[in-house]
Image (tube, rainbow, N blue to C red; front, side):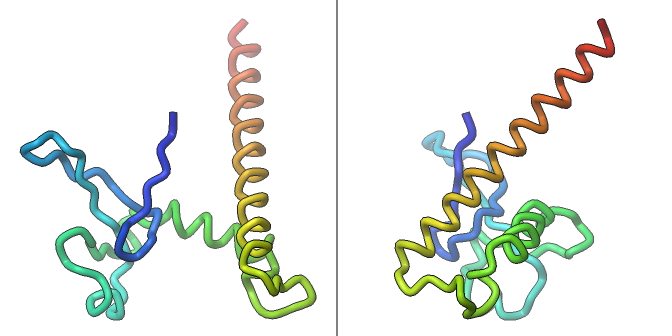
Length: 119
């Protein structure tokens, strides 16, 4: 089971485990690139600025680079721009659902080819 986590302060999905508290509660840190604007906006306790070359922000960067060209309503106001927020959220949700299904299919096909080559 995969659990989706978001930072309560900034809404980022790029979160890493940071150990547990004394009560056994899991704690997390939100990783961002080393951009100066984040220092003023995000509190220092849970946010860690990392260098782009560290590779720790690559997952969210990959998702952003996939979303922009495939969902034109995220780029600029065009004919596909949604006037209602519900439509905008729905289009993004449908894209992410379809994207995740395709990734699962590709992983399953890869596993099948590995097992068939072994047999």
